[in-house]
Length: 66
Image (cartoon, rainbow, N blue to C red; front, side, top):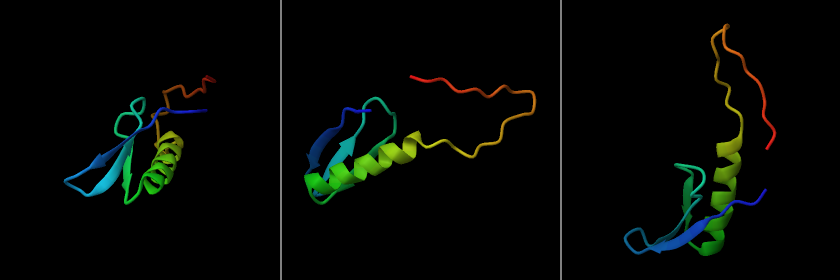
């Protein structure tokens, strides 16, 4: 799957920032555009990884394919 990624130079941090608008809070940075892109790719993978969260026994957990 492809995700939109916004990459901008942050003058204050003197680094490239990257974020995925469709995944709130999914952001990263790097010294170069290439590094920022590699870092946001990893951030997206981690963001989408299922959590180990425990759910109440009365909860129904199911999967939805998109």
